[in-house]
Amino acid sequence: MNKYTNLAKNTLVFAIGNFGSKILVILLTRLYSNNINPADSSTKELLEITANFLLPIFTFSMSEAVIRYGLDRKYRKKEVFTTSMVLNFIGLILMFLLFPAIRRIPFLNFVDGYSMLLLVYVCTSSIRSICSQFLRARGRVKLYAFDGVLATLTLFLFNVLFISNMKMGVKGFMLSVIFSDACSALFIFFVSDMKRYTGIRYFNKSLARSMMKFAVPLIPTVIMWVITGFSDRLFIRYMKSDIVQLGEESAGIYGYASKIPNLISMISTIFFQAWNMSAIQENRSKDRSKFYEKVYTAYEAILFIASAVLIAGTKVITPLLVSDKKFSEYGDVYVYTPVLVVAVLFMCLDQFLSSIYTATKNTKNSFWTSFVASMANIVLNYFLIPIWGIQGASVATFLSYYLCFWIRIIDARYYIHFRFNGLRSITNTALILLMCLCMAKTPELYGLWLTGLLFLILLINYKALLMTVSKFTNRFRRKNKTVRNVRK
Image (tube, rainbow, N blue to C red; front, side, top):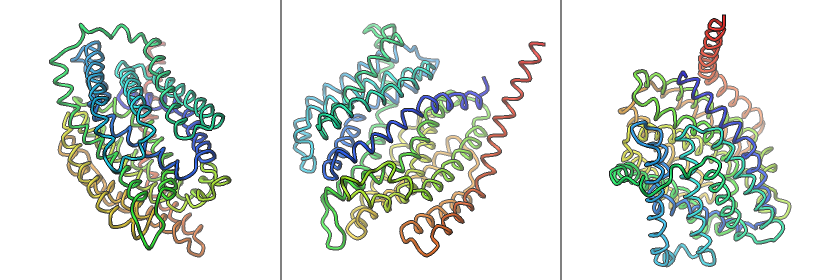
């Protein structure tokens, strides 16, 4: 199958499989804002981020190694799965042993009362992650997509039970994720007959060393991205300011402001699931540079257009996702959303460029580029949040992701070179930031300004989209013509 057709097919499968689950996630956002106050929402967000912080450290980022080695035909899939699971369990045992010391870190006091739930949360999430990534490595993308829908459906039902009906708040949320991940892992294990790939005899010490060498540099990489989101909320929650209001409620509002930009992240995730597989499979192809160029150009265009549309519709979309009927504080969420939309846009581009490091096994570069971004984020948070409050955190997040983008677009192309239109990228960024300014300042006829800026972004990017769509369409037509000729 042609690589473009394969990428399009996998993207379509993931899109169909994820569409229903993404709608349920939107419904969950309203459920949380109706039942959890801003202060507790901040605790919920911090517990989620803490779990995401612990996951890569104590699982050695094995979920990333599973997809990389599982897709590589040089390695036996039975050895890849069993070896990754053994390493994963060793890491989880270390987590339980070291957690009493972790709890004593001063700014982690929000963990009190949730310690055991947090540990179980990490365990079930790690097992489910390895099982689901191994599905992709086996090429079972349809089952992978179906499991995504099933997992989100069970998450929604458990949330309704524990939060809406039983009024368990943050604990209800933690239990919902635990039960949902456990159900998903069991479903994958039995339906896809994972037992065939499990057995201590398949554990390979040499493969374990190779996987660790690949995955260990990814641990700080993932941690750095977590720190970027973690530091925003911690600074807002604990910093003092005489100029702007900060604290638990502000941190909760910031958390909901990030929900709208996640719509862009959802689109990106669907594509990236397919793209990451193609990047690994096409790593040795002769025309990989051309492949990267065409895919990146279209991907960038889609992200800028989608982000511009989302910013223009922020005031309309926000009330649909975040309810302020019970907690009026959520009424200001839309003010902080536009800059975060742009931040997520560049996070998605950073993620695309990281696929070069994964495909070429240069994961150390993924680490140092994300390290620079996370350190910049912490410094910017320290200076901007006391002055601009929640908006300062949004700007700091955008600037750190933007810095990472320019570092990676220069560095990553040393490994896989592809043409990049820097002028178009800068122009797109300037226009979309002007849209953010319009939303923040709401000048006279700001709706007209937004429409004009949106039109300019569409004008700049539509050709890149049409060229890519045309390429896929032409290949599909040629394929159908060949099939018809064969039948004749």
